[in-house]
Length: 123
Image (cartoon, rainbow, N blue to C red; front, side, top):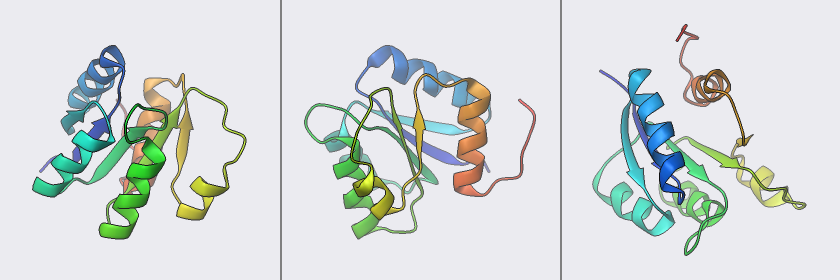
C-alpha cells in the first residue's frame, strides 16, 4: 500500500511538478493550494505526510503545521521554503523539519524518507 502525501503549495506549477514527481516515486498524492484547503482535506482523510510550503496567502505553512501538531501530533510534517526567515524558533519549537527551495528530486525524497521513516530506495 502506497503512502499518502498531502502537498500544500500556492504556486500551481510547483504543486503539479512536486505531485507528479511523488506519484512517479510511488506515493499517492493529494494537493491543496493553501492551508485552509489543506485543513479541509485533513478533516476528511488521513495522510502519512503533509509537505507544505511555508509562505502562502491565507493560512501559511507554520500556522497549518501548528494546527496539525495540536490536532493530530502523529501526522508527520515537512515544510519547504524559498525565502529566508530570520526567526526559526517557531519551527524549531514545533519540531517540524524544513527543506530549502530549490531542492533536487533526490533531496526531496531523502527528506521525505527521513520524516516518515522509510528505508532508502533508489528512484
